[in-house]
Length: 226
Image 1: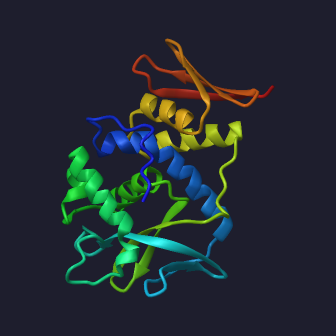
Image 2: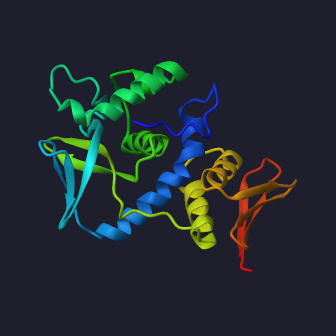
């Protein structure tokens, strides 16, 4: 599993990494949602796939949530369950990264977590390990979280997409706005400039101007087309 280390700093915790990598994951989820529509995912662990009606994608098992106890379990904690080893390679890489980075959530085999926290975990991992998307799948009495590889999920350089995603991301999640904005631009390969009360992101010949508060939180977003 290849780690996308572009934005990682030595003391980053899960919150830092989510702020940096989460917007990219959200963009990929929007693309996946447009591809599969309202289809419910069906997990096939034996074949290592998830299916949405007639669309099927290879997966890695990351972990699963007990919706009754609200506990998260990592797929790498595999002794009693016996998942196929080829499906938990990424989960094992997450643990190794967690040990190196000293991120407790990546190291503890079982811990309390809400649905939102489980999504934050998997969104972060999805982008950290250069996946194309992730999904949550009801499987028995658990909800499994898996990452997806697919050539059908293609990112675009569209200033409106960038503006909509960063706007959605900062409204839906508790993040560091400045860190999220700067990182999302950098990971997309866009030129980023910051002034006292605004930031400028260059997407091709177009511009996205983001108004900032004194605390560097996002307060307005405007797309200026060339």
